Length: 481
Image (cartoon, rainbow, N blue to C red; front, side, top):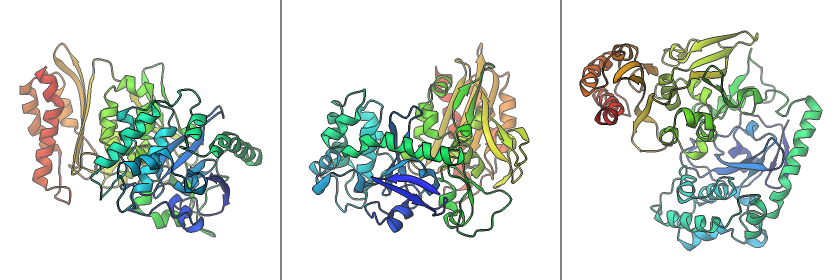
């Protein structure tokens, strides 16, 4: 049974864990303030807040998530907040809503709830509020009416108010100012009681078993389900109907650490947002915030897992391309418990065909930490600059000593049936001087390794041109310096 708080109400439900939080909120709880838009995580009209108890149990951390792609099972033990759950009695507006009204930030109103919830999540964030972080909080919300300038003004107005928010224990101030109702103060205790009840019942804080449609016939291994950002776009009805094994909240699949040997190890369920917030990752790849801003929106980064991006096997998976260049390896575990290590570059056999058994699950991702003098870059071209699927994406890792490229790894997506490590080009670069001439000589080699096709994201010729331009972009700034 799934148990969580929805606004102020304790929910206990046997609904399938693989169904969407959006459908449960609207069709089972009749909270229709949360809107149905694209059902692909693009528009943000269905944004809600999902609060998770901190390890010490003293506070709840809230994140904005698109409920159309959030598996209902991932709400277990948490506090889900819809727009109905942030308003005070008698219909009084919160400061977020007042700012949007004051600046004319709503016209048809369909998207407004998503903006309200994203900005409320920003107000609840433990991180300092700056103009940049305030704007970033709504990067997953689309508005077709306003042209965004009024919403940007509302965001700036709100951010000015949040400069008065105390750094320590901000929740009482937020409740006093009307950002959230007073009941938020009781949530740490209520979630702690819910967790303790679950632990006392079955020894685990997660759902007691994989859940699917009633009377479903379980396969040999249930469908693994992480953040839902791929599977609930591609085949939501199948996921709802099948038993699922939820991995998003499994403690053994979380965390980022650096080993004594100098490698970095990620739990398979690590999210893109956790990469962005990890001191270990930021020390290893200082430009990571710039790269991940090209990958997806804030809500999707807070949901999508790294291993999920790998196993989806999209030829243009952004995190896949990034980690290919970093030289990542996967630790796979079979249902029998047997484990093996497989380089990420050997995972892809053909389009959507993987070199792993059906019962194998990714447990960890490991890659050698780059040295401070190493060069690592990521480039992407898509129809929209942000929150879009790539036409072509590339990454490059170089170890340069005394003006020579000692080692190189180049990866590219959108130029073949699988995410590619450009092995021959990378090997050819080793021992060559880092120069414009070397780059020009490498470009024809890269063209020989790819086999793009024409599709909705560009013609074959266009993708070949993009790869050429992106590889030049990787090297251009370095060579010029």
